[in-house]
Image 1: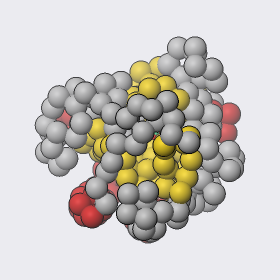
Image 2: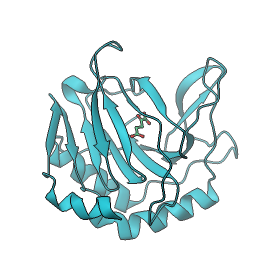
Image 3: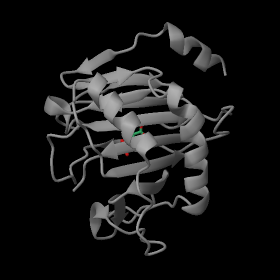
Image 4: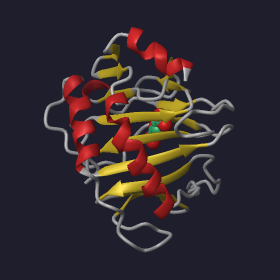
Length: 214
Ligand SMILES: O=C(O)CCC(=O)C(=O)O
C-alpha cells in the first residue's frame, strides 16, 4: 500500500534510452476495470509454465490475450493463434487494454499503436525473467508496452548486446514501460521477485506485455 502512495511524487515520464521511457503510475487510473478483468481472464485461462527450447521450464507462468499469443516449446519461441493447452483461440483484447496500450505508447511518442498480442506474465516470489530481446514479431517499427501490477519488481533495461550493463528500474504497481524505435530490440529482463503481499494481487506480480506480433 505504501508504495502506491508515493507514485504521485514521481515524474510522469522518465527517459531510459532513445525511444524508451518509464511512465510511473500511468496505468493506475485504469486499475478499477483492468484488475477485475485480468482476474476473470486468469481464472478461465490459467497461466502455465512454458518450456524453453533448451528444455527448461520458465519460472514465470504465462497466459495471453489477442489474436496472437506468445508461446514457447522445444521447437522454439513464437506466436500462436491458439492456446496450446486448450487448442482454443486466445480471448480477444478488450478495448480497455487496447486504449491503455495506445495511450501509453502515445505518451512515449508512438502514435497509433494497435497491439495484437498481450502476454500476461504471472510472477510468484522467486520467479524471474532472464535478459532477452523481443524479436519474434513481424514489424519492429511498432513499440512494446509493458504494464506492471502487484508486487514490485526490478526491471533490467540493457542495450543492443547482452553484455551491455542494464539500468535497474524499480517498477511499482501501475507503472508502464514503453520501448521502440532505436531501443526496440534492447535486452531486458526482471530480477527475482521478492516475497510480499500486494492489496490487489496478493503474493504475485502480474505483467502485461503488449506487442504488434503479426
Ligand atoms: O515482466 C516484465 O516486466 C517484462 C516481461 C518481458 O520482458 C517479456 O514478456 O518479454
